[in-house]
Length: 325
Image (tube, rainbow, N blue to C red):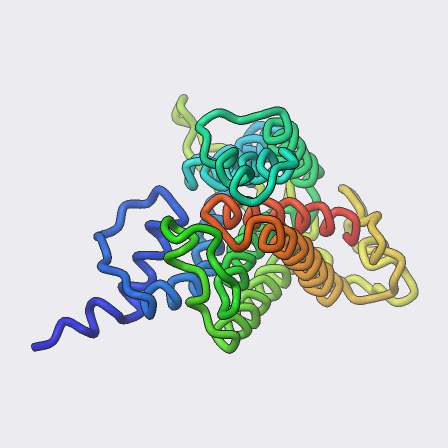
């Protein structure tokens, strides 16, 4: 019996995507370009897994501690840990390479060094600060914004690996994945990602339930997820006519939307998905600009470039979500 289905099917592609983009253990895959292309098309769905893991940390820590800021810090830290901080390292390396002012070969040599220069340090720190600040507001869709950002970061990788994008080096991760994703697969991954985020946004605005969890002393603690995300079930029957979408509900407490879209008289069931999809578009746009700059300067993509695209798209998506919602 042929081993072709096992080695080139979606299962192998999923394992390659998970093994490449996370620290989660998977069986080794003998990856040809077909498997790699499918894996890079599945990258945003690995982002869904990572984003939901970070969202759990954000919600549980913030709810139990009463500090959305602490939840944001630990959620961002959890994502860095789940990815071995390789994307942050790539962002720092690319910043050093582009900031060095050297031609292609010299910039690539700077990026290969194990140390991080001042450009890299500042860029990585700013990205982390923006991510934490964007998640620390404790608003109704913070956890979905985190998922959307994680998805967008990996979707940027999908588009960076599409046909026509060359590698900067003849070997390495960039050479392995460059040009492996067909445009149709990239568009399908984009559509699927948008659907997932839109559905999760609707879940967030409908409301979040409360759970009882056992405490160390034997008592039970109410874990009210709505404490962090106050767009609870009581808003289901609110009359939003003529009002700000986040005002005038039965329970008018908690943070309100103050972003650019908050002035529109739009039902919040539509506002949150629309705002997050626009934020994702902004993240992808920023990553596309950076990818174009890297290809022109370096001659193509590398593993560091892909990591930088992940962090850039993630950060800009979160920032755009705050500005819009």
